[in-house]
Length: 170
Image 1: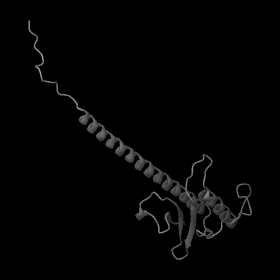
Image 2 (image 1 turned 90 degrees about the horizontal axis):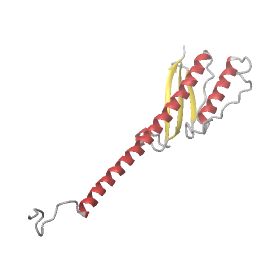
Image 3 (image 1 turned 45 degrees about the vertical axis):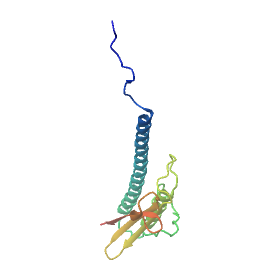
Image 4 (image 1 turned 60 degrees about the vertical axis):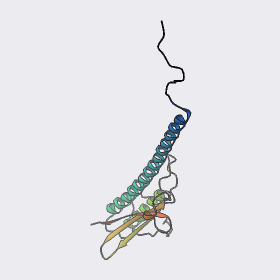
């Protein structure tokens, strides 16, 4: 009985070493691309988190102004020193001006704090500003911070991102 099998000089086609190397290089390029996408996603996630923290802080100040209506002393520039509150308005009753000074001091401490109680930096090099327009009776509450990973179109000339809200308190 004769076995049917391979003829002399005939071999089974399979993967050669070159095909394996090509497959591995394609796989490596794909994994590298996925890593780059993950890195971009993390950067955008951090930018969104920082923007939302800035917006929360702006809304906090707007609500403080709204709670102390009629007092137009809520105004401070980016480079001005934070006022010192002479009275602790959490413990005692304050006048409208004292409450405004207390609110600005407390709010600025939140914006400028580099590390929160949980160890997370919310606004890198955060600064704040409150402007009052007497003509239109509106407040412009702004927060700016360093964020070097954002695109050039979203940054000021000094490499800082500014988020502002204009509101009218009646």
